[in-house]
Length: 161
Image (cartoon, rainbow, N blue to C red; front, side):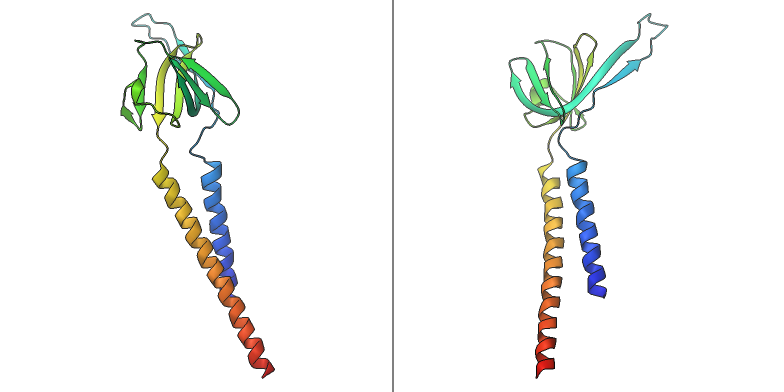
């Protein structure tokens, strides 16, 4: 009975881990959402409305950056010398630091001018650790099930003697 509970808990744990890996994916998620910044009466600057798009950087061709999300592909043209704020993995960066397969969130205005780029690299170590934990749990589950099968086989042989 205890082994069945452990097996069920292992399967439950595996399902949770798979959900974390696949539903909260490190890869692109579509999030085009408008954001408004209030105007400043002191400076006389009118409010600026921006939209953000999050996706995986799949191609850079000259000044055109192509991002792929789950539901859309979007291209952004970033002119040479443009003053775009760039961060990578939470630290200030240059546009040249952004790499293919990075997860980007690009904020742009109504004229499609890029204002800010937040980039994060794919964390392969984190993915590898999650996969390793899943494999260990699967191995333990298989060992329990096989061990249980062998014991039941021995019991039936003893009963036959």
